[in-house]
Image (cartoon, rainbow, N blue to C red; front, top):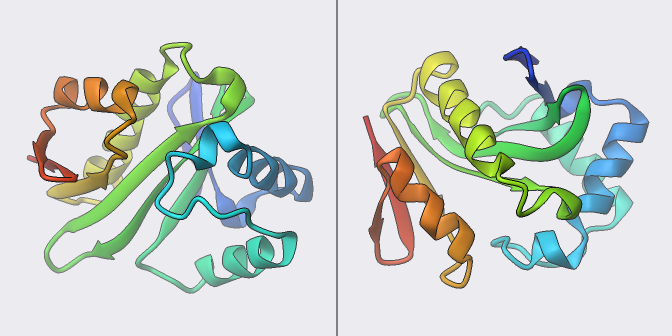
Length: 156
């Protein structure tokens, strides 16, 4: 699976990104306002980033996309631990720091779920949400996620 076009939103597979887009992803991901909510909140260096991107070409259990809104990069979505036998995976997304609080998260989540359920044919997606991330915790019930401890679960 490569790039996915929803019109206003385009999801560009990390393995198809230009050098400039790869640099942007790393810069934005390393900003404190983004990485503070991540499972791995460490700063990532360029070599780690490039090596990770290279692994995505052959790793079927991870998919990452740059999210563009009206052709402007605004964030990223990903799904890891994809299990095609049980049809499930663990997903997440982030908006670049300057786009947080714009309300675009609901749109990005809507299209991300379409990717996971329609294109990847998954039945369940799980997400870890930082307990202090009140924006995400407020958004998840709109999409029928339910909280179970530290994990949010989506069932279709």
